[in-house]
Length: 339
Image (cartoon, rainbow, N blue to C red; front, side, top):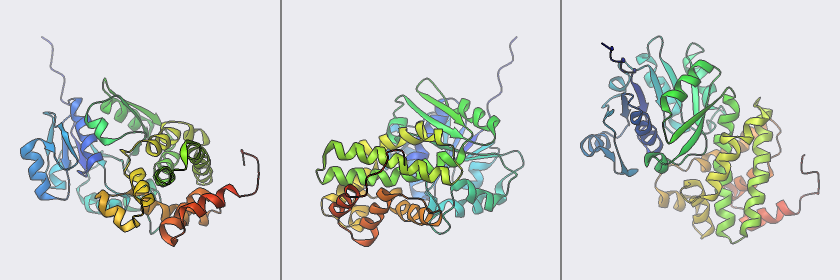
């Protein structure tokens, strides 16, 4: 008689926005027990009752293996892995909140994107400050829209960790017929890509909205990738990371498809809205808006030239007209493309 295979240990997903919900659905699709928690108790109760996240992913029904946890403690009880999917502004506070709930042997990963505004630290650096070095950690990133993951459409992404065994195990546990996870050891490069691509997506939406055309868009994407790579290498990343899913793939995705909140934000700015008005119109976190400030500060601190990102910072925070930024970029001194 064959002994039934033991059920895999649960994974706790903390953050019930669109991306956290999509990742929880994907995890549960594989049959792994998955617990999803978010801060809005009313929303959690509605999700438990309706078996979907009507606010963010109304068409993605929850698999049987996905349950709603009323508290972080309920989500983490008996879990092996913890997947955090909150904005970078909330990342440190959530880590501090759950630290007393962590047990030896647990592993942490996150889909949080962006530099911490106050410190300029990447998420893995924030995690090290809060938790120390005793925990396996990983980041999930790459060219993925939550709605398409929720719908079960074919998707690929990157899981980066210096602990290759954890990255591989997590990739296997999330992968399915329509979802493929690749692994990387370059956690810095993957996190830099996730932070800067949102700034570039605002620029793509802005230039498209102003009618600058396809030539301008592809120039912004290509030269923006150069800037992203330049910053990443200065911070210790591997150059080749930016030619993969978490670099080129994510930049192209967010700059060219209107599912991107950051691109839509740029389009609204081009229509004449203020940044504050555009943020209200979108009604969700637009990571690139805050990331533009953080990238500006980090680039200055490390003396990295990022003229496109600097121009977008000036548009967002100094009131410089976008047309003047484009004119200034086009009139910069001629130099080698590889510089």
